[in-house]
Length: 218
Image 1: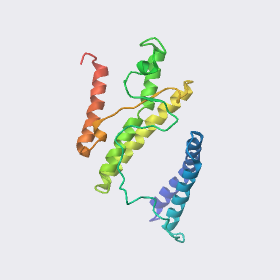
Image 2: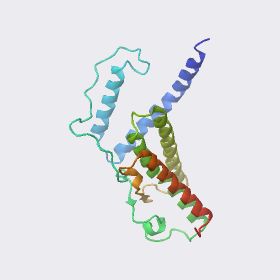
Image 3: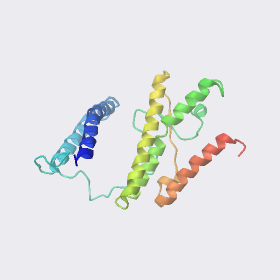
Image 4: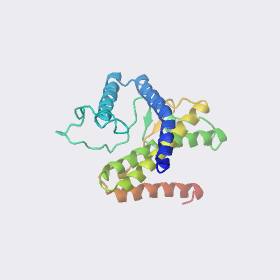
């Protein structure tokens, strides 16, 4: 009776495990189909499997094996990127925020339902830039405040969900997500900026963007 909450949590975790594993296999397959070398992905899977065994598995109760050699190169410290980037499957643009300008012309008449719908789902899909931004914050505050890292990870996961919604909405609407060019949005918050100021900047941009849609005159 005293361990009922733990048992309930474990049952929930087990119910999620199979879908998570299926998603991971599908994600790896997508990378391979996109031209990523399968050998490199296999190396990561082998490394993570060995790493998990070295701590006794998920529960920590399994026999412990030898830890794998770290993949981190200490001789050259990691430096996080500051420039937006996408994988090789996406065609990108960064010279404008206007999808019609990036495409070289209008796909539909301005302000028509089809035009507004496509712009909405493309904007949703292109929230990858928000994932990049919040990811930089997580890196910059690493090992300093667990609660802050946890909250930022939750936000980053939510931005990833938004992007997936946009991607799937494109498919449902009959578009090829890889044919529709992906917008890259640069921001000083990705540069050498204090995380608190960077967070304030990205929120300010978001709020200003919403205000502009409410009152275009401003």
